[in-house]
Amino acid sequence: MGKITHDEVVGALKEVYDPEIPVNVVDLGLIYDVDINDDNVNIVMTLTAPGCGMGPYIAQQAEWAVAEVEGVKDVSVDITFDPPWNPDRITDDGKMALGLD
Image (tube, rainbow, N blue to C red; front, top):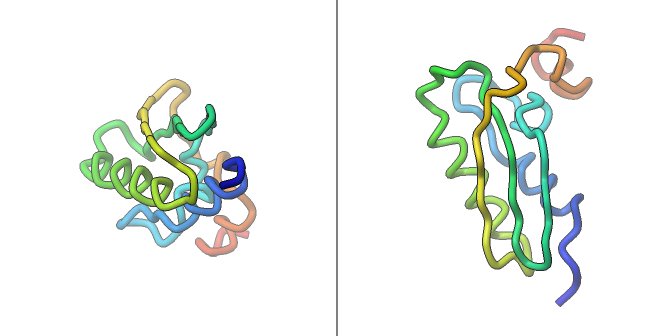
């Protein structure tokens, strides 16, 4: 079993979508930090708005997606609103998907 890579974790997170926006959480700029410590992964993410009712669902989907990465034993997802999300965090791929390019 090899070492878990940042790219593998980000690749798994790119499979997670906000159900209200057709762009994955990485390209939306919702992922603030990915910390890999041996076989444990801690993710710090945000939501597009503090009152987003889909927050727990999105966090759970992120946890499940990363748990599928080979070698991952434990995943924790922390949601923060500091700093608050803003549209400047959307990647070029995300802007293209949203027709904002």
